[in-house]
Each structure stands twice: as structure tokens, then as C-alpha cells.
Amino acid sequence: MEDVPELPPDAFLKADSSPDEIFYAAPRFVTHIDGAAIAAVSALYRGLFPTGGVILDLMSSWISHLPRDVVYAEVIGHGMNAAELAANRQLSRSFVQDLNVDPVLPLADASVDAAAICVSIQYLQNPIAVLRELARILKPGGPVAISFSNRCFPTKAVAIWQALDDEAHAKLVELYLARAGFASIEAQRLIPPARGYDPLWAVIGRAQH
Image 1 (cartoon, rainbow, N blue to C red):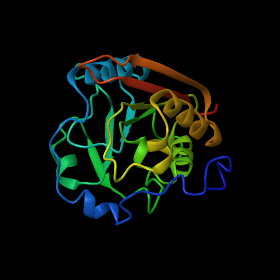
Image 2: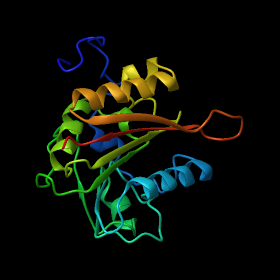
Image 3: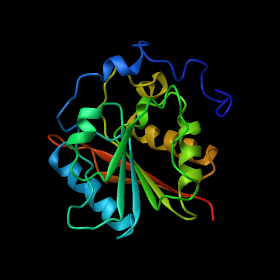
């Protein structure tokens, strides 16, 4: 990909090259990280996302991990399965879109206060295009929180993600955000690797002022 010429030419290929809409056609009402990791994500959001703000939960499902005692003006959900999004009680509205086919988000410039991508960044085949769209729709200084663990659907995660270890994943996400034009990029290890628990990292970027 021309935005990251230092990566191998096959970096964003997947083992399963069939359309993503086939893979995600059946709803999965499961959690993809354990309770401690979910609590850490919620705590991250609590500290970053403004009360009363407009929040975009990109690549969401039937649960958003937003703190339930915080009131937001609107929570917009995006995902690949309409039934999952319909079951998510934290969403004000939602839309289904395959970002690997069309990365352009149907939202106005500077219309969102904060955005989240939880345990899903590894599935994007053109992550910089998607993150540039987030930079466009976020208000100046608005944060995007990208969290990830060591779990994934291996046939749908891109090759470069599967070739790297967890610390290198954080560096890769930092690279994505930098190339997309984000400022004040910061990586955090929220839960260190330990037997019996899901590790968790987050990389936070802020839209340019």
C-alpha cells in the first residue's frame, strides 16, 4: 500500500479472501475479550470520551463497552451485522458497511467528539484510509481509542498483524495513525500479559486542531 511503503506488498492480504459480508452474515453474540479487559476498555473510554458528546463506535457489535453510567448525546454504531447492532442497547443509531470495500464514512466533517475501535483494527485492509475518515469526522482534538488484545479471527486478520507480536502491534497502530494525520499519538499497555487473563493495549490519537 502506497501509504506504508516500508511494509511488505502482501501485508494486508488475508488467508480468507472471500467477501467479509459472508463471514459476518451470522450474528455472534459473544464477547471477544474477558471481563477484566472489558472493564479496562470502559475505564479508558470514561477518561477519554466527553460526557454529553457524540461518540462513534466503529466496528462495533452487540456491546460497546462504554461506561453505562455516563450519558452521551449520541452513540453511533458501525458494524458488519445488523442483528448485532440492533441488539446493542448503548447505540442511538447504527449503520452496516464493509470498510474494506468502502472506507468513506457517512458522517459529516467535525461531527463526532470521540471514536472507538475495539479489538477490530486487525481486520482492516486499508486502515489508513479509514483512519483518515475518522480524522475528517472528528472535531479538532477529538480522540480515537484503538484497543486490541492477542485474540483475532485468524483467517480474517491481515498478514502483517499475524506476523508481529503484541508490542509490535502497538507500533503498527501508531504508524497507521501518524500516516492518517493524527497528533499526540500515545500507546498504553492496559493489562500486561499474564496467565489466565487477556492482555490489552490501546493506542490513542487526537485529530489535528
